[in-house]
Amino acid sequence: MMMTDEWITIIEKAEELTDMLLLSEAAAEYRQSYNTVYSNKELTNHIRTFTTMKERYEEVQRFGRYHPDYQTVMKNIRVQKRELDLNEKVAALRLAENDLQELFDEISLLIGKSVSDSVKVPTGNSFFSSSSCGSGCGSGGSCSCSA
Image (cartoon, rainbow, N blue to C red; front, side):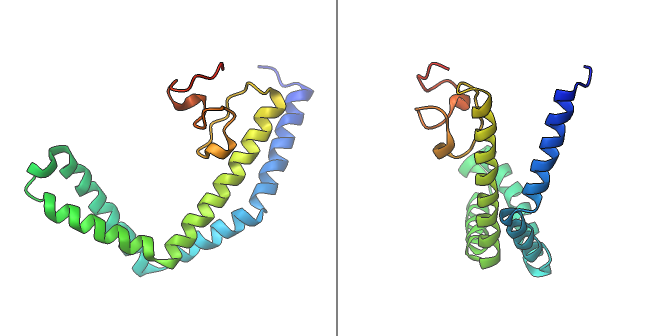
């Protein structure tokens, strides 16, 4: 593909958008929350332990309640998840992630709509979905939209 002035302009504008995103309040809040969580050794160890337990959980799920450790793993995974969910630093990180994702979703929608109303824009938020079914056209064809 040959580089044209149009492509160069698009790339330059994309770089400008990237710079603006990196300087945004949502990105700064995310970085701060991320650093707060992952600079805390105790919390990092707790996350690592939870990740290991999730792997055990997935193993136990393959066999269901017939697995010898089913009860223990199911109880431990719930307890550990609840502890992480109730941690203020983890909750702040999740909120910051959601805010940043909403910003990305809005930008994706604006870019897609600037090309055409029929452009499919993948978003995890049904508020930004361009489809009347609320889940977007990428949801497996369960909607009856015309796209």
